Length: 228
Image 1: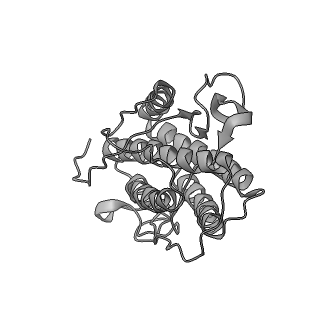
Image 2 (image 1 turned 60 degrees about the vertical axis):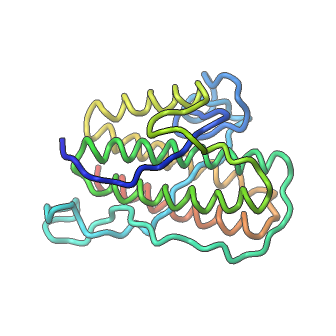
Image 3 (image 1 turned 120 degrees about the vertical axis):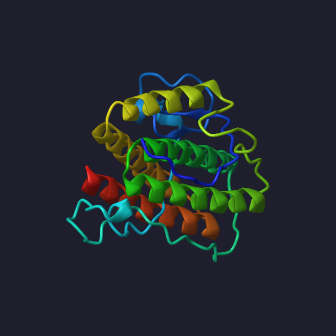
C-alpha cells in the first residue's frame, strides 16, 4: 500500500443510490435495473475527464507500455457558458441526485487509488471533484437543496447510499482487476443514465453539463478499460 496526500472532500449524500448509480427516490433498491436499483427511479451519474494522462505514476510503465502516454482519466474541466432555463420537479430531483453520485464515485476511486498504485484512480477521483463543483453551481442556479454537505470520506447519511458504497468498495478491495471492474461498472451506468436524463431536457445550461459529462464518462470508461 502506498500513501499519498490528497485533498479532503467534505461531502454528504442524501436520497437513494443504486449500486454504482443514483436513484431519485429513497425506497429499497434491490432487484431491478443496473446495479440492482429500481430502473423506474434511476437517474444520471457522472464521469468527466479527457481520458489523457502520462502513464503510471513514478515513471512506471503504463498500460500502453514504458514511457507511453497513457489514458489515465485526467480532467480538463468544463465551464458553464449556456443560459439558465427551466427544470421540472423531477429534473430538479435528478440534478440533486447527481451530486450524490459524484461523491460516491469520488470516494470509491480515492479509496482504490490509495490501495492500488494506479494513476487512473487518482486522475478520475480528481475529475469527480470538479464534477461536484459544477453540479453544485447548477443546484444554486435552480435553488435546489444540495444533498452533499457535511460528511466525511466513505460516509453517507442515507442507508441505501451507504450500502451501495460498502458493496462496491468491498468488491473493488478484492483485487486490482476487480477495482478496475467497479470503475467500468460505475461509468457504464453513468452513460446509460445521462442519456436518459437528456431526454426531454430543455434547460440549456443543464443540457450543456450533461452532454459534457456523457462524453467524458465514455472517456473514463475507455481509461478503465485500457488499464484492465
